[in-house]
Length: 376
Image 1 (cartoon, rainbow, N blue to C red):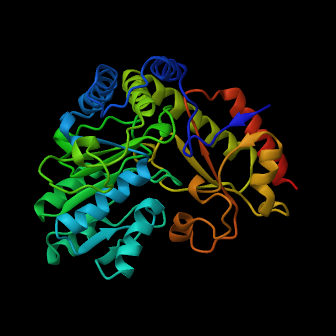
Image 2: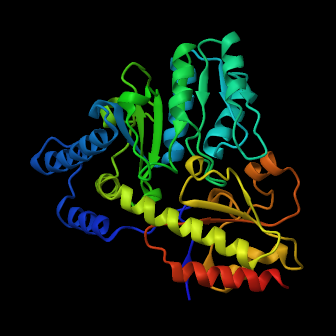
């Protein structure tokens, strides 16, 4: 049996997304920057996709910019904020995705910013009171905090953080890569400055993402070389990816409630089955379902002789999971998120992440295999 439970790394393409992308690949080959009929036809597709994304997020189409990934979108928001908005102080957390953390650490090494990282509790929640305390003495700061952690699933109250930022004239960037397509984001109410998404996290294609930039913020291009994306990002657009992204997000919004109910059920079922069949199992991150990403379950397992080979053993059994962020696959430095939350715990941890395509039968198979491995 082959089971894929690494949807936080990437999701399978929805068949409807494949269909619209294939149709576009077969018919729409013009360069959207060309002024002739073939170019104008493709330009229309890009702008139609932009309007669709904007309408779902309650944004203006002029506030949506397509990128190659969530990583590029994060980099663009952070780097251009610091340069163009004259920001020298940034607040973030030690459990952010490396697209954010590594960018900030590099800027700090260059002497361009002073970086404060918020405290993280034993359950993985960031210290929002500390955020307020720092902002009181540091107006005009950039705050960069993700909506949901990609490894342990903790949800952060970005609405509250946005309100705190507004009260202190701070700029707020949030990485919503893990929650885009799984929760509704209404930027007209959230009052966020920058928000990012990546298509392959919600059953769209890899290699395409987007950045929402609140219209009140005027920044310069991150990539030069052309007038694409209204002079904000040079380079010929990934037209087929953009078409797929818009379709995937539309499907996600149309069926969000039913998918959330179904996937949350799978997560709770797996959690209860693990507790019933494995002694001394525990879970990393917030235990409160209302404050935890319903697609992610990070499990801490008892130490056994094969603990170091657990992911490999599961892979041999046909089970695809992760020990942390897929962006760190092949690295032996461990998870910076679990390090921040649990310190140097010797227990093996596995991230299971679910999608609408998973089944209870798959969960039963995985739990049985883990129980078998934990006895060795």
